Amino acid sequence: GPWTSFLHTPPQQNSNSNNMSGFYEGGTYSGYGGGNSSSNAGGSSGGYNNYNAGGVGAGGSSDAFSGSMGSAPTSSYSQPMQQPSSSSGQQHQQQQQQNQQQQQQYQQPSNAMNNAMNNAMTNLWNPTMAMAATAAATGQVPPVDSQFIMGGVESMGKHLFETGWAKAVPGLEASMIGLRPYFAVDNSYVKRKMTKVLFPFLYRDWARVEIMEPNPDGSSKYAPPQEDENAPDLYIPSMGLLTYVLLCALCYGNAGKFDPEVLPDVTSKCVVTQILEVIAIRIGFYLMEAPVSILDLLCYTGYKYLGLSVNMLSGLTVGHFLGYGHRSYYFTYLWTATAVSYFILKVMANCIPRRTSAVGPKRQFMVLGFAGSQFATCWFVSQTAFLK
Image (cartoon, rainbow, N blue to C red; front, top):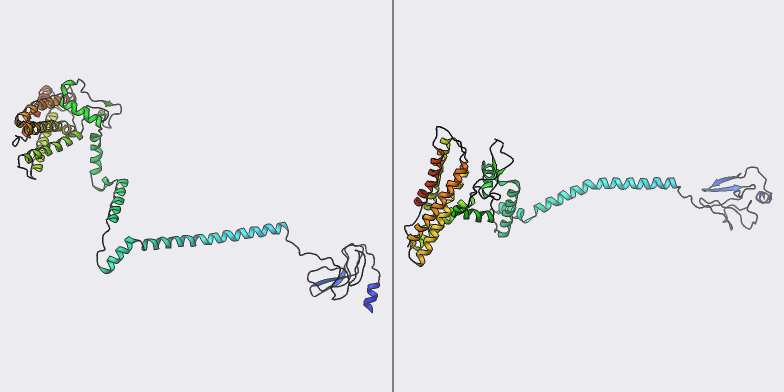
């Protein structure tokens, strides 16, 4: 028939190396004829996306092949599926990266929301919240955990310490700043100062150490007690007063006359006496037009409590073993009162300027008066009624 004549017809030579003719059937391209190109093909095929060459039982060169309609070729050249190029692959990777970034952006708000919800649930179900909710609902007080209370107190203390608890009380912070230099002491200073108060005759240097940086008002600025043994402090006077009060209570207890009112009575008597003494000395400085700090006067007049403690300790010890408590007390009193008076004499001589008011009291008399007052105050606050 026509197909036989067509298959036996020799192929025509074309100048175009890729010349093809054929038809498209069922998604398959079938080519007729050919030329001298290796891509020319004859026949038809029923494959999908296959470029089939050759026919059934027809041999030939690689330039021309024959085939039959709808038959499977015995020898064929199958063209593989077209792979994406490098540029298309890069675009695909970029698209994937963009998708991943968008997913991460969508997940971040959701993660933050989940974390917030988890924290809220954690705070809601902690033991403290559960205890408070139970107490509010039932109207009953839950059992108190001592460890929980101690932990709360500790955390509150740390918070107040870190944020400055002194700011909570008006004026307390300024007072602490002013008192801080008077408590800047160490063991070495305390030993040297106590020795100097009890044995002042052994020392020659009584001048305070000045710092190169003056105060904003132009007055001299002195070194703290840690750096200068002649600097006044409030540690020794406060500890001396406390020791003396306790020794007086011990004296009353040994005589069987102890009463809780002894502690405030002795304390108030000492404090009031010292305040009156400070006021009198401050008036003397005012008349001489000499500057002085009230805290410095409290320090200097408070060193007498060290001598009073020594007196009471001597009276208690000797009275307990030998029965001469009164005699031992007053014998020691003569030494300590003289030592404290000499100490005040030297200190005031260095505190009061050489030049004072021309119309005020004489400097020498005021210094002697301040020193002699220590004998009177030490005798007035003595508690010897129940010494053996």
